[in-house]
Image (cartoon, rainbow, N blue to C red):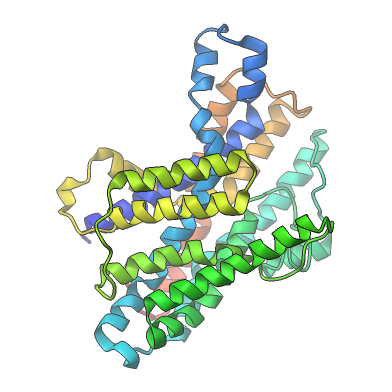
Length: 380
C-alpha cells in the first residue's frame, strides 16, 4: 500500500520525538551529565568529553513529549475534521468505533509495559540499585492500571513515562466534548475553551504557591495539556479547510521554542510546555502539508520507520535503561564514558522493536480484524 508523504512526515516526527525522549532518559540514567563533565574535565578529556558536550540539546529532550501531544491531537481529529468539513452540524462520528480503536491502540502495550516495569524494578533492587521513592504497592499498581496515578494514587514503579500515557488516555476520553464544541460553535471557540481549561490549573497552582500552601489540589491533570493537544486538533481543522492559517515565517516557531527553553531554565514548567507546544504546532503544520512522496528524503523515511514502533520504544525504554544501569552501575556512580550511554540507546531501540512485534503489532491486528474501518492517520 502506497503511503502518502504526509503520513511519512508525521511518522518521522513521531520517531524523532521517541528517540529524543529516549536519549534524554539515557543521559540521566547512564552518563555523568554536562555539569559533572565540565567540573571534572573542563576543556580536557579528549574526544569523549567533546562528544559529551554535543549531547547538550538532549538535556531538553523531555520537551518532545509536547510534540507527541500535538501529533496525537492532529491524528485523532483528522477524520473528525473531514466529517465536519463535509457534513457540518450533521456530522455524527461512530463513537463505539472510536473508543474501540483507542483501547486497542494504547492499552495492551501500556499494561504490558507496566508489568515489565515492576519486574525490572524488582531485578534492579536485587542488584543493589536505588529505586528512590518509587511506590510498588498493590494500590499504586491498580491506580496506574486504570490511569488514575498522580490523581488518586501514586504512580507505580520507576518508569516515569507512564504519567504521559495516562494523560493521553484522558485526552482520548475528553475528545468527544471538544468535537461537539467545534461542531456546534466552531474551531476557534473550541480552542478558546481548551486554553481556559488549561489555564485554570496553572493559575490555581500559582495561587497556592504565592499563598505558601504546601499542597496541590487534586483534579484531572490532563487539563494542563489540553490546549497543547488541541493545537494538533487545530492543524487538522486547517488541513481540511474549516479554518485558515495566515502565512507565518518559520523563524516565529523557532522563537517560540527558544522562549520555551528560557522558561525551562527558570523552572516555569507550565509556561515552558505551552511555548514548546506552540513551536511544535508550527512543525506539525508544516509536516502535514501535502507533497509528492519523492520529496521525502532518506532521513525522513528512516525516522518514519522508527515512528512505526515509536509507542513501544517510548513505553519500554525506561525499563531497559534501568536494567542496564543495575547491571553495570548499580551504585549510581554515573560514568564519564559515553559507551554505556550508546549501549543503552542501542538496547532501547532493539527492545522497542521486539516489544512492537510481540505486543503492539498483535493488538493492532486485533483492532484491524474487528471489522471497524478507520482512516490511516487516525489509526496511528
